[in-house]
Amino acid sequence: MTDDAAFPFRIGNAAGEAHPLAGEGISMALQSAAILADVLIAHAGALDDWRVQQRMREEYARRWRRHFVRRIRCASLFAHAAMRPGLYRPFLPFLQRHPMVLNVFALWCDKTRAPPALPHLAPAGTGSGASGRLAATQMKEQA
Image 1 (cartoon, helix red, strand yellow):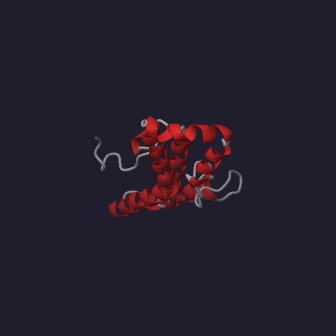
Image 2 (tube, one colour):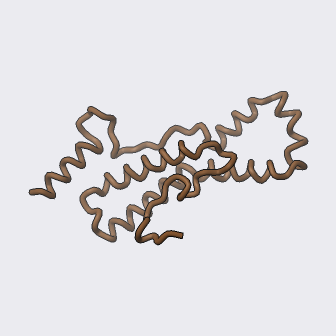
Image 3 (cartoon, one colour):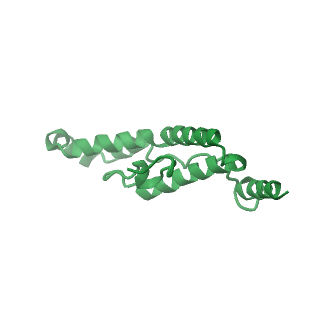
């Protein structure tokens, strides 16, 4: 177990995103890294303030849960069902005849959810967003 003071933000496997049946480990790791980058950029001018760090941890955790919790829970449900043949065997003939049901389940579980909205990360070349804000912050610090 790591010390939260030394490693306050977790992404990928460290955040518990990789589930054996989810098949989403790298996608979820990249999406959580983008959420974290957005949070860090939003507070770039005050990263040394412990109160700001606490707010960042809370904001990141809130946004992470909002984006991933349903997907993680559904993957867990699938894993538990897969370990109990008595649960899934009766449904196999139905799923073989109607495989689109799995697509509906994927939609319901947010497996097809778009990447998170990142208000502080603007597309490259727009002159705003992360690079513009970081440059402005660095110029203020140097002045």
